[in-house]
Image 1 (cartoon, rainbow, N blue to C red):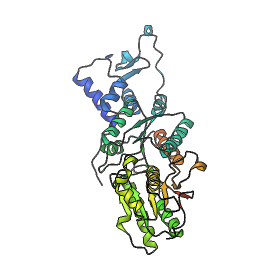
Image 2 (cartoon, helix red, strand yellow):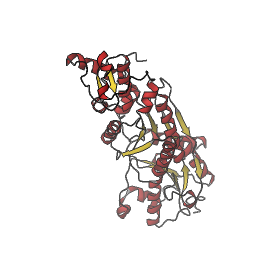
Image 3 (cartoon, rainbow, N blue to C red):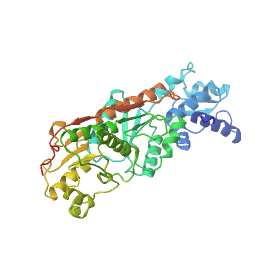
Length: 388
């Protein structure tokens, strides 16, 4: 266990103000930096700055004057001239009440993109949960790039976001800003994936169970050549967990694992040139009778490639995708899919974050880890093994 003592962010702000007063020779009545200036200087939330300022006021280092700012304190300033029409000194109020009064009631949501119904339903869940508690949601997209994700974190903190919901970028290395937020106590919850070896609050669907359900169903239909496909450029923890579920399900049936059926790390661009793509040849040559795709978009692409190759779904091959890619209304979709309850995922993630934010303190060493149980929804893209 790391025994290094980390200085809380609010204390760093306090130390800065004390040093500023001493080094600059500030006198009683001199104005100190505004909350907004301190938020930008330290890249912290408004709550952190308010916490620091209340502490300094309680120690009589500064005096906070509503609507005017904060000033170096002395007895004369504490009893301001009535000509300033300042209100009489109010009784000391609790830090909790002060923080509540100064809340922005903004929560940030950072996602790689919004290109499918999974993302849309997830966002709906987040927004409903926040709206019920009187919070607003500001959504920024990272476009799947670490640097843009970092910039989104910074922007949202500068806006005074009281916490972040983060759908992390698929990258080989962690975004160190997530680690920094963990150690600083800034409230955040990870969605759909977690950082291996790093304790954080997160919520995700059980990927191992999802692929296991898919393999079990295809096996019942008579399929033995079952491929699993991912177009993620990296072997992320999400991809790995789903592949592990696929492999374990086959092993439990006594089946041999065919490495050729684990198709990962490729990209499908325009389907105009689909016939040149290795995946198209794989489909056309009927190397597998069934495909499990790790996202809905890829399921649609395999469906379209099969049509171009002169094959019919599900007569010639079956497809199961993670999430229904074809309709936001469940009853109208055609894809057999692994339902991850993304609306519920977003709703519960937002509830978890608000619980942390409204506690007013970091839950030291306690993290909420939620795995949602997926379900297999059987529709029109799966059928029994083709008879040769």
